[in-house]
Amino acid sequence: MAQAKVFLIAGEESGDQLGAGLMRALKQRLDGVAFAGVGGRAMEGEGLQSLFPLSEVAVMGITAVLARLPAIYRRGLQVVDAVVEASPDVLVVIDSPEFTHAVARRVRRRLPNLPIVNYVSPSVWAWRPGRAPRMRAYIDHVLALKPFEPAAHLRLGGPPCTYVGHPLVEQLAKLRPAEGERAPLAAEPLTLLVLPGSRRSEISRLMEPFGQALEIVARSTPRRLEVILPAVPHLRDEIRARAAGWAVQPILVEGDEAKRAAFRRANAALAASGTVTLELALSGVPMVVAYKVSKVEEQLKHLIKVPSIVLANLILGENVVPERVQWDCTPEKLAAALLPLLSDTAERRAQVDAFGRLDTIMEANAVETPSERAAKIVLAEIGRARAG
Image 1 (cartoon, rainbow, N blue to C red):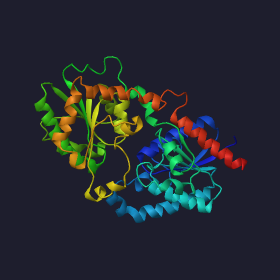
Image 2 (image 1 turned 90 degrees about the vertical axis):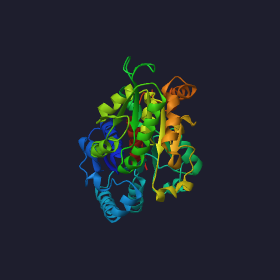
Image 3 (image 1 turned 135 degrees about the horizontal axis):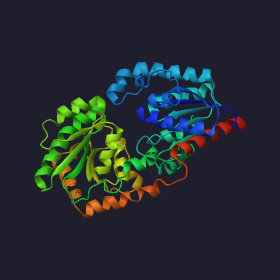
Image 4 (image 1 turned 135 degrees about the vertical axis):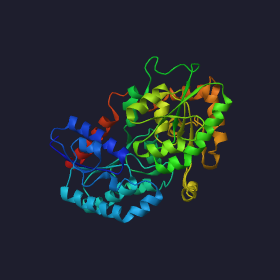
């Protein structure tokens, strides 16, 4: 294939990481590929000169988004103009659908023949399923991270969708313990991983019930507990302050390397809902998952049609990981679900056995990495457009 220009748009940190992996894979397959668009440090490290800092649009939470909406809207219009001016061979929008899909719709009106690839499917299988058929008007191909998503798009009338694999399968060597790295369950101390989230709203809602649950667990078991809490740098001080009154003092660690080392040591975990639940499952760590949202967000729960909030459960197709959400997220209920995981019980064995099936379900042993599969489809879309 001749040289190509790829325009990529990421809307937050996770999308930046995916975009960087895609860029690396494209460079391996295509000499002289040029990049333009919006990304963060990872994508800039692969050669992207971002139109503006990713932080200007990487805003999470309803309140924060509303406060920044005019500025985000203006940036969106700027990106559309930049795509039209660049006239690339393909546009790849990465996650953050509220921002990236608005750009894609406007680009499609102005450049109707430009192929547009959506990397990371919106959760049409969980809520707002009507988005799937509407996406056909401006998305040519969806690159899915979850193995059940192609069937969901087919059922809902969405665009062509291919499962390329979750980027975590590229991290298995860092997630899984080497021999002797994870102490036997009967050893002292028992290592418990606590993950209250990476957003300030999660920390503010979950640190207190998590700390109180640990106190109940410590009183209810003769085991000595070692509690490790990976902290994101920008919330480290707040986490330390909120944990100061915990009866069981956690060891705070920072950085991806220290976090993955904690995963490889942990015997069990108490975690906020999110991608971390899949990390834990792939690492073989039994867990209890919790989540709390604001009163405004709680009013939207009737719109969500999904059997679990735990990503590992959704991929496995069974609710093997207990979840305690909103009013059920109490210290007593968290502790009651966590205690059976601290010894060789049926509850613990059920999770471990289920996690053992993930490699097959997620095609973790495929010859190509998720980034390589994604690159292949992006190049195929370029070829399709040139042939047409």
